[in-house]
Amino acid sequence: MTTPLLDLSNDLTRLANAHGASVARIEGSQHGASALVFSADGVLIAPSHAIDEDGGLRVTLADGRTLDATVVGRDPGSDLAVLRVDANDLSAPIFADAADVHVASLALALARPGRTLRAAFGAVGVYGEGFRTRSGGKVDRWLQLDRSLPWGFSGAAVFDAHGRALGLATPALLRRGSLIVPSETIRRVVAAILAHGKVPRGYLGVGVYPVRLPEAVATAHQTRAGVVLVAIEADGPAQQAGLGIGDVLLSVDGESVEGPHQLSSVLSDRGGKSVTLKLLRNGATVEVSANVGTRS
Image (tube, rainbow, N blue to C red; front, side, top):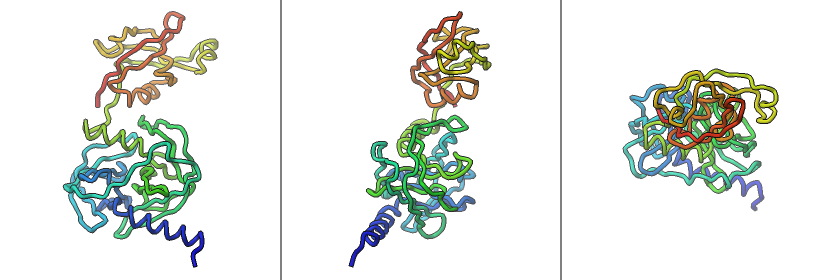
């Protein structure tokens, strides 16, 4: 005799058995962390905070093989590290698209902090707009489960009921609880690291100082402050765009800039791109296009 609860239990077991092969163990990690296979040709992703050193790293796959792993690169802003092992037969999941994720959808987190696969069952509790982390990284969607994941689930892969990977769990981006770095962020960061060994960071080549805006300007632009340009790098992106000392930068592509740290965060993932800068210049608001530079 079958029941809906028994059917659900059997489905979860099948899901874990099918996709546990995508989850590897990071050997020697003090965090009991896991890694997720990104592609069959030996690329894995793991939480950057759980990897203490780039050298001497080893991972154990679901089939029992323990392989040396190289850290291709890291993005501390999203707490992702890209690893490579000498293998071309790995089991990689299908990564979900943003349209596939819904609040209250069931989710299964799979981790391998020890010798056996571990599972945690829940639902998508939060799926909201993207945000920038304290270190300036861009996370495309706010994704959390409705429960706190147990110890040892750093780097856990989170799957939906169709077996699509929703993202990678990390406790490093929030003060409390685990955040799931979504699949679209994973794809973007992995592509950048495989191409450049890092996620290029954008810059304008300016020195800035925060200033409080006049009440009328603040009301019109719905922001309390901006940054005044006090130095401009010779032949840098800002100078090439025609910016001058004394210009007050209000926003970049519509994102308000109220201080130096916020400017760095807004520019961080825009290296090599053209952006629209809104400035307060001689009492008038102007918009200027600038090509953001790239550096480590």
